Image 1 (cartoon, rainbow, N blue to C red):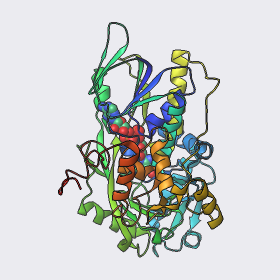
Image 2: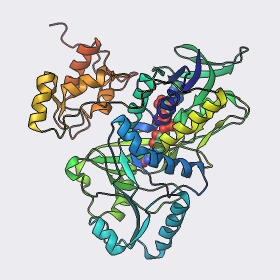
Image 3: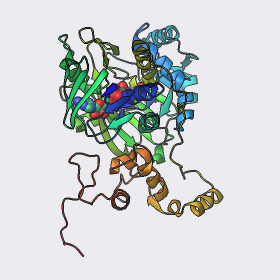
Image 4: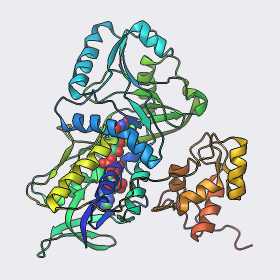
Length: 479
Ligand SMILES: Cc1cc2nc3c(=O)[nH]c(=O)nc-3n(C[C@H](O)[C@H](O)[C@H](O)COP(=O)(O)OP(=O)(O)OC[C@H]3O[C@@H](n4cnc5c(N)ncnc54)[C@H](O)[C@@H]3O)c2cc1C
């Protein structure tokens, strides 16, 4: 029995959990996967959008701009990387230059600061690898790049330190109002009860909503394919380069990532499949062709992996954050497609404020608003490295050669609150396995560490929970 149950440990659920952890209330997050950040929050463009895209007056616009403004303080408090690299919407057809003005004016109305329309010359000076066809660009200095895994994990970790419980591998299968006036949530791991429920289930938010409401919701999964390029070409552009938006969204972008790779994507393909995250050759061809219209000679030979994410698209294309009319004490956080990552701190604040008022919540005196991230060895001087290794020799063993991740960092990832239990859990917290060889070298070594530290047998270790086991059985018996 909890005061509040949040369904889903994506960036929305984690931001809400962190905000609720400020108050004297018992809060639990139920997540069907084995870790935080397993849904859409793990597969997106990782852009902190400036906020000129969403319609003036929409909740999307308001929360995007607010979330963007909150990101510097949040990144500092949670010790996660965030860079305001600025974004550019480029125009390659003279007759479409007016479109930049429309975006500019909408951005100004939405409260986006520092917007500027650039001439062809100015745009090329700032970004020399833009296409020769560029006619002008809209520059947004407040656009940024962030690590979506670290953002989500850090907010969840901080919530957990402040008392929020997380139950992983716990799928909500049905919800009913009991005679006791509480919500009863049936899961694969028993029944949970709560005074309030927050539905932050991503592409499944319609299924969860429809369990309690007669006014049915339908989410369309809109798939976006990506290619991630090696760090060797991470500096090919320094700003986030967007085409002009269409009714399908912001279009195929080319951007550096906060960790120094180059990211190209996403496509926008409507599918009716909540688990349809397989990339297709056609999707990859399309994103390459579209990105090449705006950026010349894209170094696509340097692709190290491809992936796809699913937008939780509602026909009305708006965030739905409200108490369900025919289900009091049940809050939907649905239709959180882009710019949901950018807006997440503001989404957390909005839901926290709603529940504070409805439930008369009081603030904790001992709330801890900061968190220390994993000690990174990247960029340390020889002296600093030697000092660290003296304190803890595990920092002297490199496990992931591509990203230079040490055993010390992996141990930290496993043993901190809501620690890693799988290869992907380690990867998302440390970057071990994110590099050019995509975990070909470090997987067996990381498995040795998971086996030793968590007492998991090799057969039990998974890539990312569920049935993603890596080792099936021994072929040669005990030695
Ligand atoms: C291609 C693409 C590009 C994007 N680019 C950007 C960008 O650059 N910037 C930006 O701001 N936004 C971007 N977004 C949007 C952003 O990624 C999302 O808005 C955000 O990640 C949504 O987070 P969420 O927590 O609402 O959903 P999710 O991350 O999907 O989390 C929902 C969680 O609920 C869990 N769950 C579902 N059903 C159940 C159940 N029955 N029981 C228990 N748990 C359940 C899931 O396992 C999941 O972990 C992009 C999205 C896509 C798809």
